Image 1 (tube, chains in turn brown, red):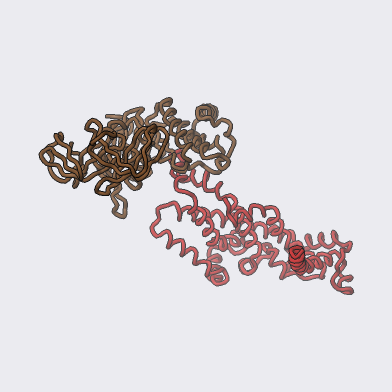
Image 2: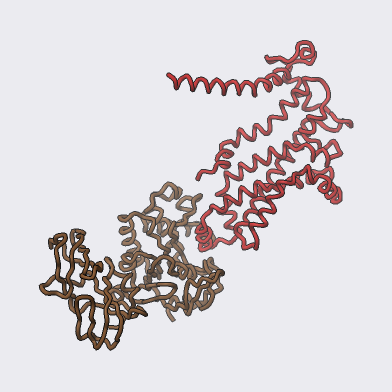
Length: 350
Length: 273
């Protein structure tokens, strides 16, 4: 049995909404697990069930070998960082950090020691006497983390903690969270809807959609080998291009081109997925792209345009290439890096 | 220039308003420092006389009432006990009622709240006979307890606290729970400190409300020992200067409370967080 075990966990709200469907998942000790998915997919509900803030309708949650279903949140020894931080507005930073320890009846000296250590680790020692309202967004974020760290819990739970920060700070805090987790070595679950955050933070990530884990794996596994149309579309930026096609006798015919010798016996209507970065310009390529717009990011160019059938398409090329608006590009798919999904089920078939 | 004229004009109006309110009070105060023969001969006075200590000391210590059992000092004591009791008891019960209504999973909590709220439409004067008979049955006539308890359930204070609790984000409760706080600790460590200013405001409101009670103390006390200041205002007899002095002193406790706590009072009524 691993450190955290979810077995057929289901959540049905009193109004009948099924937020989480029979989800099973194990998280190893020290692992950084990320739940990623669009808003309303049930990822936060799943996290809150681990914390004990939501009742479990069916299934079991085991943490460190103990069944947690009926255990009160205060007894679970988990710490959570909330989206709006939920700092205690009437207490100064020191007391925010110390409160959980005081409730556990730890003596004053040990509390002071622990709070000071955590504050040092997070570089908030200078603000210990301040109230949360006197702190900036990034500092509040650190205090929220400090409150979690200081208790030395079995597991850290992060509920979209970076979404209230501006873009620059978000990237900085993302890095700090990752470093901190590696340093402290605490098992963590991080919920986000931002796939870049998910990819960069996760040891393993679970892509969740409509209350179901669509795919579970390391970020690279999921990027390289998406098992469904949803995962393929959700992971990767810019989004994967999707084209309609038909698969018959190992040959895929799409609008304007054909791909032969496909490694699949599937037949029928399919969706072809190609990542913008898995294309390159050649003469007489498979795909003809009429350029509408070029976004120059410096290191890369994102080329947006349309195919013959007016379908939107994106191509990513190195930043040193100059591409004119309204020009026509001929593109090939790199090394058979394309994905074929059954059109009706969305499952990968190649 | 026009701005100067309009602002001078509005200040003039404000000044007249202040005069209308302050001058009568001042006249009573000034008159209360003269001897009664002076007032009887020359009418109300605008300037201070020299009988201040004499008049006020006599009023405070004079044994009054039919049975000569009560002094003004005792009345102030009674009023203070009553007003403080009403203030504390109503704030405590309202805090707890609001907490239960907002944070406990009570069926029909909203309906229950509105039922509590409707009691505003049933003031003490309307239910005075049943309330009196309950107090009489319980042998609480002529006691501080009987003076305080029947007017200490405040729907208004419950409303204020309930509305405030509803603005407290859920994450705070959840975070506190994860930090090991039980329901009682959350109430004591979070809601009470967070509603501190509102508690002070309500204490002032309810103190003044309790202090100003007239009909209920009149009914529930037959012994002069329990007379309050407001009852005393009606019962006072004797010379005019002594009555004036008593009127002046009766205003002091509510004014003092408001002056001392006004900063919190304003913050609490107009919550800005």
